[in-house]
Length: 329
Image 1 (cartoon, rainbow, N blue to C red):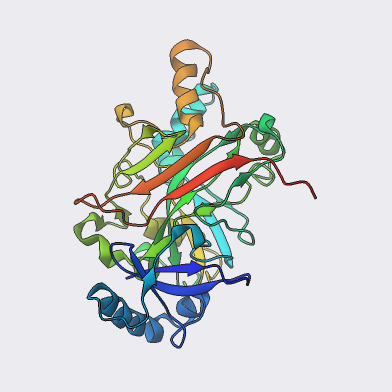
Image 2 (cartoon, rainbow, N blue to C red; image 1 turned 120 degrees about the horizontal axis):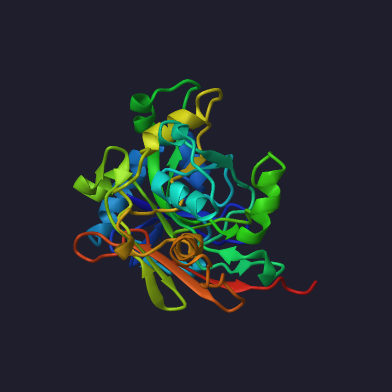
């Protein structure tokens, strides 16, 4: 099943079911008006929406309309929790090596995770608004999941059953703000502005055999200013699958329905597959030449993030964003 949230003038938008080919949509009103309603009562509402999904795919839905990703908010427009991991540890090791820092061995066994801002999540076509180009604007292409209620202390095996939907994410980083924030010893805040998500959220069964071990085994394709810069496989070199990330987040707290858990920047050891964030490219330059030459994003720059199935069909629709300065008040 594929679902999305369309703008309707409210903070939370209107839940719609989207056809598998992303061409048609149908309002879910009468079953669930908002994405959070679905997540709060998944076992009751999801089967009803799936019936609508089947009818939509078969051309039997009476009030279907053309699906427009530009009208989408984030699938879950504001969430109770957005926690982002760093599951591709080779990426962490590379970035640390570039700045001459050794990586603790525990990073391979104990996931890294930070608490992001979940009150202001962006739609797939919303601008990346940043007060200054000097902040070092960087995209980060990721996969994310949405859970239902996860009890505190849930093991990875149990956590797997709480994954209800998957999305793509652009977890924007302001790289030039990060060093000073981390030096304070209290983690990210100003260096992590609003995150954008794909037009649709997708249930794991839609991936068939490409969803296994709590990982999506498909390439994530990134274009920067129209040029493809990365196509790493999201399932390869993922040290911690989503069940492990969820279990890590739930070690000392309950995760309530509507919690979003991110994978961190997708990265492969095979560097010929490119990169999903500029920082990785710059790290490789630092290691090879002693200096980074690739610039960060500027106003007017664009980024597109998308994933395709084995037949070339878009799975989530595309994140397509432009970097822009704040509007004058």
